[in-house]
Length: 166
Image (cartoon, rainbow, N blue to C red):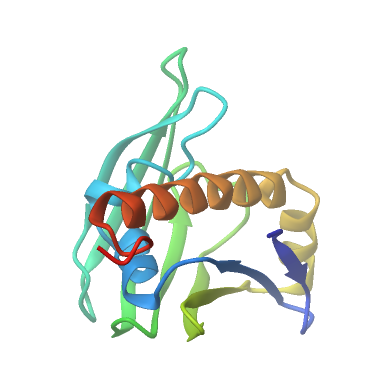
């Protein structure tokens, strides 16, 4: 399964991937700190050193990634919509902005036949900002993170017996 990246409007990037797991499990992996720290941005030596999530409308989240050399990258935002396990949306801004302003990120989960498709729409302030983000390694990072998520989902299902029918 590969990450599909599209640009449906002049300000948006949509990233879509299907996971071989039920929607509730995928939603938990996208929103619970104890699961996020195992896959979200955790590749190439990076770790998710700080992960807080207050999953409610008006609640905040905060992520801080750390490289092996100690360099950090922080991101935070506020949830504007939370409809478990179908969707959530919130703002996104980085401590050291690599694009101006904040973005609105909407994540939608659709399950069919025990597989869940995650579509993440990021809406930026302008076409120039969106195009600048597209020139970064963001797509590679998301693809690598989603590969780690797929591994986590598979191991979680195997350990709880849901794949084997136990």
